[in-house]
Amino acid sequence: MDPLAQETKKKIDKVLEVLRGDLSTIRTGRATPSLVENIIINAYGGTARLKVMELATIGTTDSKTLVITPFDMSIITEIQKGIEAANVGFNPVVDGNLIRISIPPLSQERREELIKAMKHKLENGKVMVRQVRHESMERIKKEFEGKEDDIKRLEKEVQKLVDDTIETIDSYGTQKEQELMQI
Image (tube, rainbow, N blue to C red; front, side):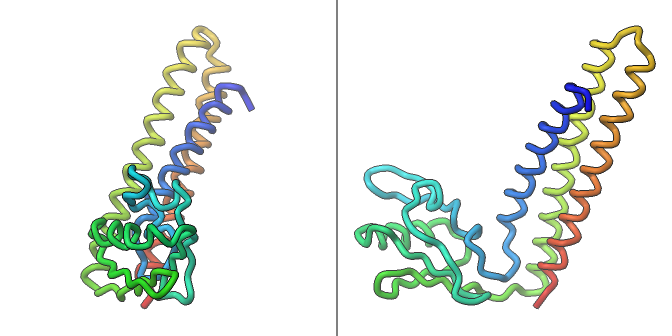
């Protein structure tokens, strides 16, 4: 693979990574740590995300219950307040040395709203991929000016990467939609 195509692939992979992270924030009615790991917590005189600060372990006991176990019990109320303040529709309950969060079931209307939001995020991902393609095509034309065979070959290579990535993004959408529609 040409170095320019490899660079394009790296940029596209970064877009996919961002998109996967973005999609993981859409809750599916199932308990997953990604629902709370990016919530901002005020602790130790500063603020940080629950996951980044590594303030606690986040796990599940079943498909409807999240369990957060703080490493330092003195900040358990700060974690609880942070989750409540995040306004994500969760009601954290302190249960001894841990926090339990019951994930409420999604209504059909809410599922449809989430699917619409997911499709918007997918379209944004596709736009970012097309932007990477546009930048690569411009660079190919500039660097290989006068070498029509090289330009055509590299443009095909980049287009194949883009087509494969768009397919991958569509498969993410199909998978997430199935998750959202499960009751």
